[in-house]
Length: 283
Ligand code: C2E
Ligand code: MG
Ligand code: MG
Ligand code: MG
Image 1 (tube, rainbow, N blue to C red):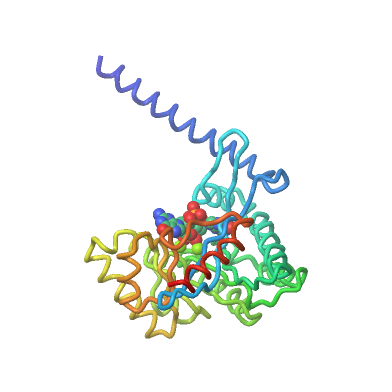
Image 2: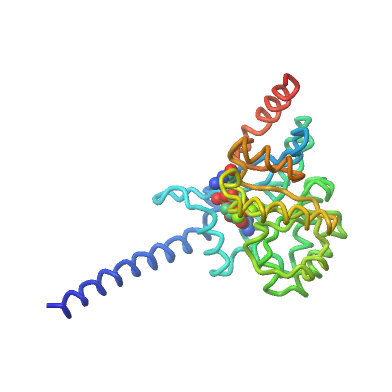
């Protein structure tokens, strides 16, 4: 009867919940060992100047290959590491891996700049500025080689502390970018008081830019707003030539997206740079 059916539905729902819960527990347990077991890696996605196409830098993005469950998306495992309280360990691994990589590329004659992503908890970790400086020093790197990407929502959680921490990092010579701009609820006055150099417009506004006039209006005014505040503006998620042309026409400073390149494994980066520069010289 109906009551029984409702019960069955509820039981299936609970089983689904249990499965989700079990997955979370398994992932949280295994993530703690992931770095030590060499399951983490970084991929690098180029950022280019909209006008002229000059290669500017790369963004480091983390990947986790779980031995049984395969690739887990950072949107899932970063949030998990934050909730479980060990995001700091992942950040430290990432910082040292990036700096070692930069020093390695430098020995091979390429002076590459890299942006890294910080989580909300990193931004309010008083140990962060020291951790960053130590990683740079250990590999003999200039602070200008690293940029930090921080989301609006990360700053909103504790704007005062975030401002102090980011200020300290900025004083050490690191550039700071606001990531996923447009998806949070930050007020302009809060952003203005931060030592920010760059606004990255979230890809949700960029992906269908060539089809949706609403997105075009938002993107145009964001670029204008950023420039009026003295910031450089980046678009992420540039997948089509039409979007690229639109963004360039709107005066966007930098572009990132599958059209230019997917995030690349470290060992492909130098070849990519070579090929990209050669193709550009030919056109
Ligand atoms: P994000 O920093 O906003 O990075 C951009 C995301 O968009 C990346 O996803 C990238 O692979 C993807 N993407 C780039 N171009 C395109 C495109 O043209 N089309 C589409 N559809 N997507 C594009 P990914 O690598 O899955 O990373 C997701 C998020 O996870 C990142 O968003 C960042 O917030 C976070 N994340 C990644 N690595 C780290 C890390 O080392 N530490 C921290 N705290 N967060 C990280
Ligand atoms: Mg980012
Ligand atoms: Mg982003
Ligand atoms: Mg994002």
